[in-house]
Image (cartoon, rainbow, N blue to C red; front, top):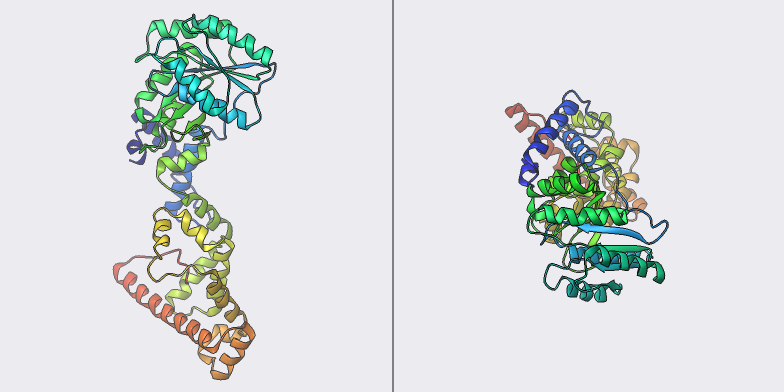
Length: 411
């Protein structure tokens, strides 16, 4: 449902879920992960594999100038994307030249000149001259001026037709571009599949640039295009400004399609620090009311290993907004957690295992050893007792409902 809501092509979804079932059914649940989390992890990994396991970089400008030809339908944002790509390459230390080869759309040449000026990148144009002659002259100029990339803004049409393809095929044959990049509007969703397929069959695309990813779309077009056209996505446009342009990272897009925020990062952190066997032992202690302050300290230290609490909260979709409003009575004060740890560390092993033996003189010693007050020690012991009561109540409720709860951090 998440994929279909993200406007991924139905056939792509069907094939994907079949592959997913084969891998997930019977898979061993890893330590620290619940079966549900394990499925999420598998889904995410398969999405990343489907869109390309790693970032696909643009061809290097050996024997410059290297020609980059941008193609696509009218309205996909080719001209703006050409300027964005030029600015991106310039920031990387390259010297790109833009070529205005769209002689059909009104004001396309003027638009490229304005964008080129804003990006501080030179633009080559020859008015209404034939596109192949414009590119030939631009290539010559780029070589003379020492430009290492020649970015060609080609003409588009409202739909794919023979005239458009013939013109693009001629440019490909004459100039052998290092990259033929399809610019596609991510808002078009499943229609993007047919566009990518047609362009790829006739031109042999080397990459795709997705535009308008700043809208409501979750990027389903990314999955559809990559799966059907079998062509890597190299860049994405994330806004109207010229610097709203970045390389495509499959892992980030997979999280976006699933609407997961950074939950996977959180799962990975938990997987790295939480011991499943110890968690099961802890669960048994909770149910038998034999939980000790030593267990509490161990859990607290595992949570600390996952990083600052503020960062952990930001990884959970929706919770980061709530954190900004204070999360009710929940405090994210790292100093408070440090005080708790210091107080428990100042106790003897017997005191941690049997908090009931901690009398007034022991409390004074613990407060002195931890650099806190007796009131702080009293507060921790009171909260610990309240937590044990809560565990008892939860255990009774679950027993009545015949349910079992797992994965609880007692703090």
